[in-house]
Structure formats: structure tokens, C-alpha cells
Image (cartoon, rainbow over all chains, first blue to last red):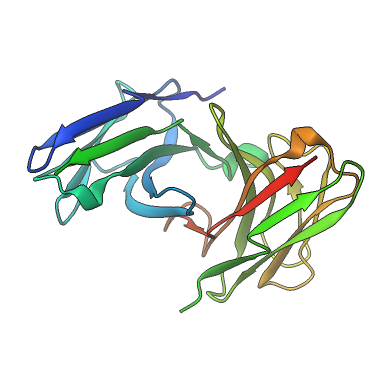
Amino acid sequence: KQEVTQIPAALSVPEGENLVLNCSFTDSAIYNLQWFRQDPGKGLTSLLLIQSSQREQTSGRLNASLDKSSGRSTLYIAASQPGDSATYLCAVRRVKGSGAGSYQLTFGKGTKLSVIP
Amino acid sequence: NAGVTQTPKFRVLKTGQSMTLLCAQDMNHEYMYWYRQDPGMGLRLIHYSVGEGTTAKGEVPDGYNVSRLKKQNFLLGLESAAPSQTSVYFCASELTEGGYGYTFGSGTRLTVV
């Protein structure tokens, strides 16, 4: 069974600092990996999607990397801002096949980020 | 651009009552999902659908039923609510399986007393 771990559970940084959020997964046979942002009381917003054949994806100040062989992904946030404060969730999808597992994302519990002005 | 809309946003139920949560998407997505989010547990898949008229069980299906009579709507039903079903429920959809990622609704906060 796939397990996804995000460390740390919470992180507080001063504004302007670059930071890295970590995600690890136990089964390297993944189809893709997705990073989400969740604001308090809100739904999840997709940030970046990395296919298993890719090593990284970038969007603005965000860069996500994927190392399948080691079961790790990182989300790098450059020049952090107070508006980046949210919970960041990592989710992995297993290899395509038949049955329930083909469609299910396995989520980590998230890292709660606070950017202090 | 509505995306994925969930109704209601909040609901309090008494134990044993029934209710239906509605998820509607206007993006012509084939795949739709219902998740629940609990503190310390992360998001867990309840049921999903790979197209109109189809449904399948996810990780935690007990106590829930679903229907996908129309492509744009995915309904989650609780026949006899229990306090253990107190949670935040999220609906998500995607165009095809795995390729483009999920779009989530804003959630329904359900309390069963």
C-alpha cells in the first residue's frame, strides 16, 4: 500500500526566504505526482503536476522535483510571501491498471506553512 | 467559470438522518471523485466514477452511496448518518484519467450530532 509522508508538518519562515517542502512515498511505481495548496476552510488548488517521466515542473516562484527511484519529491518556493501561507499537500497516483488503485490519489497529511511578514 | 461546485457548504445532521451532497462540474470531465478529509488522516477516497452511469468504491465506502446519472453531477448519499461521518467532504473531477490532475470543489463541512 502506498504511503505518502510530508515533513515537516509545520514550517514558519520570515518573508523573502526560499524554502523547500518535502514529500516521500513508499512505492516508486507511480504514474504522476501532484502538489496542492489548501487555504483554511477552502478546497484544494492544484499547483504542479509531474508525470513519472519528468524530473521537475516550474510555475512562477514554484519548482517541484521528482526522484522516483528514491521515492521523493520537493516543492521549492522562492522569495516567500505572506500570501504563500497555507497547507501544502502532496499526492501520488499509482501506475495505470484496472481496478480502484488506478484512479486513486494517495495524499500526504500536508505541511502547514506560515510566512511571517 | 464555476469549475466544481458543491452544495451545501455546511450541514448539521442528527444521528440516523439522511442527506445527499451534490457535486456539479461544468468542464465536461469524465472522472469524478468524493473524498473526506479528517484531522490527522489526510484525504481518503470514498467513491469515484469513471463516466456517466458508473460508480466504484474507494478506500472508505462504508455508510455512503453514490450516483452519476448525468455526466456533470456526482451525488454522495448518507442513508443513516453517524457521528463518525463528521468530516469535510470534497468532490473532485478530471478530464481524463491521470493526465491533467484534479480540480477540487470548495468542500462541504458536515457535522453529525
